[in-house]
Image (cartoon, rainbow, N blue to C red; front, side):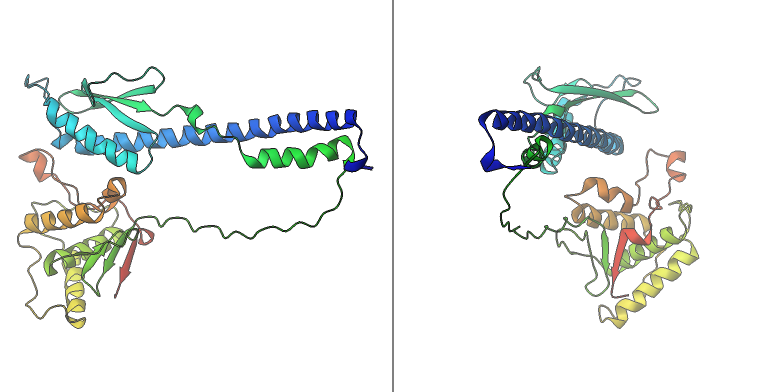
Length: 321
């Protein structure tokens, strides 16, 4: 097998042609992977945005076709700007361009931008949502590994052997992946956090104990319903009392044990306010830890349950227990 120094001009030409062909092959495979990854990211982003808007519809003034009330353009446009800012911070490959025929900006969408639409249905009307999507070809990038692999494989494929040279590979430590947000309940500080950005939101004794107990109760009883118009289950109160006794042991309080059945609305409101602040950068992740609000009035409210969505011990961290 010849060495590279012994190759003729024609042999160099064949090697170069083989390298170009191999580069095209390797890069095509990389492009396919990049497009597939971008496509999956896009659909996951659309699902997250659809879920976010559906949760916010109760508070978004999009009018009512049945009652003949108009859409509040200013409120809807402000909502889209706020959500789009969050999407941009989290590098989502899309923005919300339209809700119920109200556009996010007065400028028309560029023709080069891909769009998508979906419809959310409520008991009274249908809400049309428009999205502007980052084109998939934006994810296409030339990868240096395709060039390197082509240069290494071409001489072997043609039948030439490069001279042996000493090579040193620089050891590069891979950066650890960013921490995934999850609920942190710290009994030592009587705070809750998201485990990702160091936030620690201090809570009062009663809402802190009740929420810590609610989380544990919902983990142990994933199918439980907790109607807000009924007394708190004794099992949940027992857990809350244990948390309160632990706070006494840690020196946080010497007050009388609170009545966890009293002023439940106020307790849940304080819990939601603390969670809003704790998970402000992570609105999607917040939902699994958020006691649902009552929707509607009268009989619909009586059927409301403030039980958390299904969670497990892997979704939370408890310190000082």
